[in-house]
Length: 294
Image (cartoon, one colour):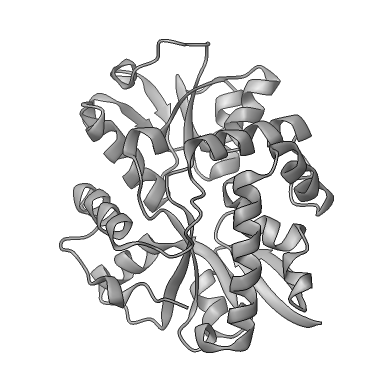
């Protein structure tokens, strides 16, 4: 077996196509044994790819756009999509079957302030006819701090990636009322990236074969089966199995995981719409400078 080092910028059920590439035995069938890490401030995706400790990583096409805006040169390219929509949800304090985005006006929302979730949330407000300054954005820190703060009573709403809001609901602290993915629509959200050189290797070809099979599986398989395998692999030790299955069902229903693995130019341009609106880029960048076909 050949060892392949895989890194995630963030760890979530949202990335089940990649997680099941590992947990579902698809890599093993290609002769690859995985080592999986989650990035930290001291061990980033770009640094790990550059020093060779990571072969392939879950990241976001937007990371390269921001680098290009800053004039940063990089050998990292994005070669396959993971999610074709944003995977964040809004949860409220009380059930609200009649929720509308206008209800956020004047309310305190614990918003994930990482660059892409923040840009997407602002664009969702724009698409839904809400002026961002009319909403009180509360920044309490990282994903763990956001969850703890809402459980402690801070904020009227919380903005989180699954399965965190679904677990909040299960624990009686919140109720999922909306999806940012629904509000924004299709976009090149999360992706797989690697060095240009690695993308030309036999390992890359074997990985992509495994990934395509895993992706097809998570689109069609019962969520409970996917959740069981991810739990067995140790990916979500503190999440209730029913909550994990519910979250995966939500993502299947949203259409986050499309059959096509290639990142489309249309979704890339939609992504640039989001980041132009947020002011994080000042102009459009060429598709070929960010995305490759493997």
